[in-house]
Image (cartoon, rainbow, N blue to C red; front, side):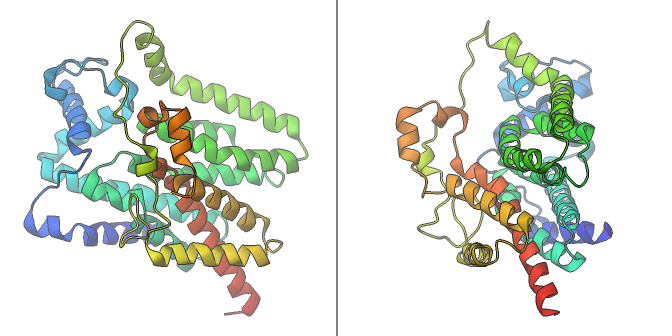
Length: 362
């Protein structure tokens, strides 16, 4: 069962890295220097037994800047340990690609099996997820939103549990731990995860017979998650009242959207393949005419399309940029929402395929 997604993830990661593996050359993307510098800092802290949770005394030019404390601190130390084990930057970069593909591939496969997709359909859905969006974009860019995208299927597994609360009550400990892991890896992805869970939670709350129990266990999950991420939000409380913290770089949201109006040749960052857009269109048409067949399929499709719309140039981002200029600094890229839209839409496409197979007895 779990050997299939492992083989698939390793195979796709190897194919996409063939140029690097043959030429033994590492890539330097738009975010490589920033993230690898902070991982170098934690690696040197571990190597020299000289720990500084806040200051960057080895990375970032030994300037003492504060980065890791408010940017996935525990994950940064995990990455530093991995860097020491890798032995070279080339090995480290190759290992990270395999690692992110395995994490994402397993997550999407388990999510697909969670909603009763067959192994074959689950593998197809997982392949689409790995090859589209931020997961594959990690290779040339080292954009850290890819790690948030890799963890999103695990978040959606919890979302499915919330959606089905009327049938089987969700595990609040599992929900809290999942959200805490996301927060320890990529803080901004935590916000996306919460936004993805809210509609599923609302549906589960409306349909469940024991609303009080669902509210109580949700609050328990929130409290446990806050405890597990105290080092993250605690760092903000320590730093911001007494320090002048620089905001992230300013990027115009209108220029970093997913371009649906002018399609590109790849489905990565701001462009989407015509074939993928066509699949999303066919899924929309199917649900429009068969919305009563599967409540889950209809719900996931609508939510996925909503996130796709927000991430795209169809949304009035210039208006948002005009009235909320801080959005340009702290969220930066509207296309980040594809990290939620893609797994939702690929999963709903898998549900459609299963429905068609059952209906026509393929």
